[in-house]
Amino acid sequence: MLRTRALSALVLVPPLLVALLLGIPALAAVLAVVAWLGGVEVFRLLRAAGYPSMPLFGTVLAVALVLEAAVHPAGDKAFALLGVGGMLAGVGALVRSDPRDGLVAWFATLFGAVYVGLLAFVLHVAATAPAVPDDAALAVLGPERGWVLLLVLGVWSYDTGAYLVGRQLGRHRFLTHISPSKTVEGLVGGLVATTVVTALLLAALGQSALGAIVLGPLLGLSAQAGDLAESMLKRAAGAKDSGTLIPGHGGILDRIDSFLFAGPVVALYVLALVR
Image 1 (tube, rainbow, N blue to C red):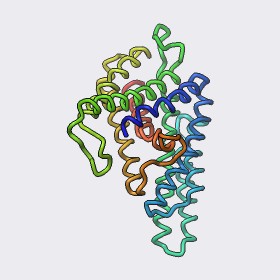
Image 2 (cartoon, rainbow, N blue to C red):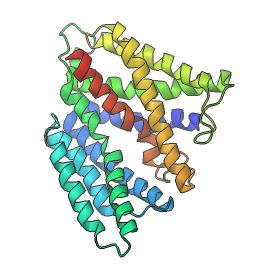
Image 3 (cartoon, one colour):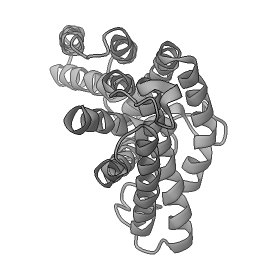
Image 4 (cartoon, rainbow, N blue to C red):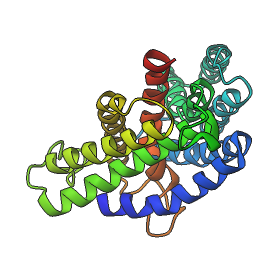
């Protein structure tokens, strides 16, 4: 599993980097497509796990959350959108003949939409990024693209470090009821890798590299938590992969699960400790 994740990053990271180089609008368009594909997969998994939902509405809401972040990057309209979405999902659940099914469908629809909609935080990272000094190594990218690059490479370095160290030194497994391949040694290796990469990128963005002492472990742990959360969903659904969109590498949800949790963490770090 770790090998698949590390190698499949080579499938996902280049398109993200190309979109990032083209600018935030291009990145938002890519994320909207990814949110749609992820929504299709997550609601398929929920159905297989025995949770009724409203897949089309939930997927549209997930995409809307991403597009809202592109139009209003400060996030001030997101709560209103989510509130209206929750209300409409509740109304839609009323048509279920069994109130218990309706209640579950209401909850599951909102869960799926919010879960995939966490992709919006990639755009919030760009929106909240502090200015990059002119003499910084990555000044040419600007703050928006530079901080999203930190997020992308931080997640990729965690997956890669966890795979390499876990493969060579992994002995002590944890949370085997969710993912039998995870080891403590791999976790430590991933945290070291993402901390080093984060330190380099912080310095290249004109920030203190010492910030990686906080951001590196937080980014790595959130990436790992995102992976495990999606594994739990697949376990509940009895599925090995979230889909078959990427031959040999599963579905799109298998590739973005770490970003779903890492994005909010990086956005919070920037808001709390940098700005």
